[in-house]
Image (cartoon, rainbow, N blue to C red; front, side):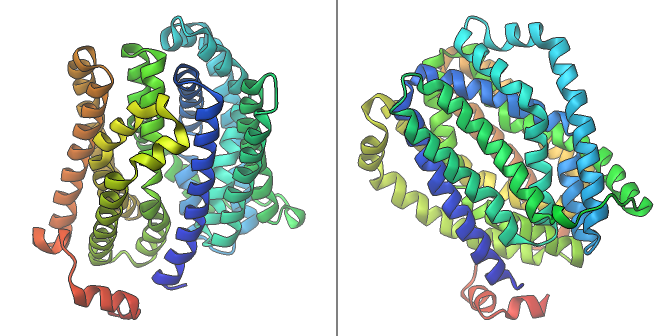
Length: 429
């Protein structure tokens, strides 16, 4: 499947997912106040963080072996399922052993957040399966099956949130909706992996590649999700639950803009994994996506205020201001996300780890400096500085690898667009 067709399919899938997620955010904001939203976001953030850490590096390892060993569906599914179950049970035992210390450290006096966390964490094995099984489809290039595993659970979750408005206990329906989302994602992915014709099959070469890649990627997974979840983890210690709710909504909405990049990343990964070529393709994609994203951001941020107020209500107006402040991170995260997928595919793990470390250190230090003095605004400043640090490092590394000028890296030319649209770009590279 050529780049334009692959991108169109994954983009439309992500676009539908973003619309469904946006509807979920609107329903949640209407169901819960900023304080309750902050508590829910904190509990969900910690649950998914533990899931990612407990999975070691099996998620990227699954995509790696699925792309590398095309056609070995049973062997890959065997190692994926067995490793996911073992690691998830181990992770669950670890969390329960440390649970008293965890809830005291993270939630403090937030009893509502603590209660939600205690209801979500038993489903840790399901969460891990909901991560590894869909990524297996993605690694095989089965974009249609992957899309189904993402879209259907979102539709069901959104429907449940709609029913919550008629319930006397909407919070429990919100929690049930999240759990249902994880279960459906795992079940649908199993079905799409042709579980009806599945039989246990072990291939020593695939198993060796899988374990080697999982162990190699484990530090990267730790750092990746530490960087992604650290703002909320830090914010829970410096901010009130109401301020945290404002930040979580703004942060979630800013992540929605990353649809353009998340639609491209699996294509970047699979293409680079197979070709191992100079990152000219990556450079041009950074240029095109950056130009499109800049136009989108300008249009939304200059004229979207009234729409935001209509959807979320006046009580979430601080979130709109925070979203405007966080807007530069969207472009910076785009450069970082695309570049990291390229470096992971060519197995430059040390390079990626160092980049993540720089982002985490920048975020941690700036949180300590800015959050006590500026509160939620300081947390936004910290996020911007961290995104800037990782983007600058990626620009330097890509420029060095490709031996191109900075103008070539950041600016797209008319003839490049023409080549991409006419599929000449793929033949030339």
